[in-house]
Length: 319
Ligand code: DGY
Image 1 (tube, rainbow, N blue to C red):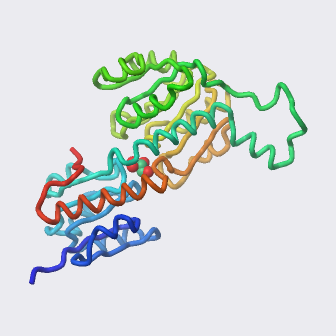
Image 2 (tube, rainbow, N blue to C red):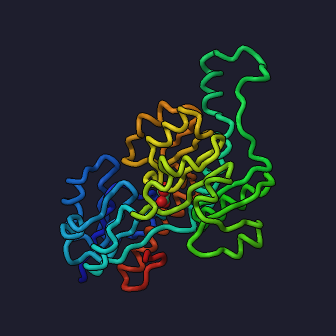
């Protein structure tokens, strides 16, 4: 009888995914509280590993897993936590969960755009604190999305969906992308420009880039200087895209209009300067956190495992 294949879920996979893994496999769960040391032990003899954005997958973890390891299935579309070269050197396939979270993440970007532009969290806090003394024409004013210029930095799947969702606001679009996206130019009248021009002209700047050495701190002290003092910055990509000290300082000094952020460098720590910054809407990395998207992500993780462990091609390989 052939041995059971060992699938190690370093933290957690939702039931929708677990249901697909079948009883013929040995499934081990680290749990949300597991530590990097636990992971090194847990992965020993694994055929497949399930990681997520909080789990760095590097040479040490892969070597601890050993030579049976065939797959790292990342429970996320982003895979900056996975050392792709180290995986390739060991012949380990890497998969992610694209498409199924596009709508959910784009919707959160829209929510953050509106919440930040109108500073909804501050208005709500003020109301709850009993500070609201009645309708006041000068109070609680924010920026209006209708008719504004929206800059989409990175016109991939999520950036495009975000742009499509804003159509009802009658906005104009600028975008950056390594290659021209004819579909969005035709469909939305979007104009492809360089990053500096986008930053200088956009009223809303929404980041939809993957994190790597090239994109680290795309928004920094210098690039913020190019932006309008009323600009709304939105980040649902990765925390590393933004220098949070520079953003917090610009908000505090009125050189940036507002920020809606879902991701942070060094999560789950949130840079304290952002917590103190004015006109800032902060959410805890919930871009894909809808019931539908997270279930579908879990299913895709499991489908990749089933395919690869059966010797077939992965459904959504990375690279
Ligand atoms: C992703 O899939 O990369 C998301 O950030 C996870 O929520």
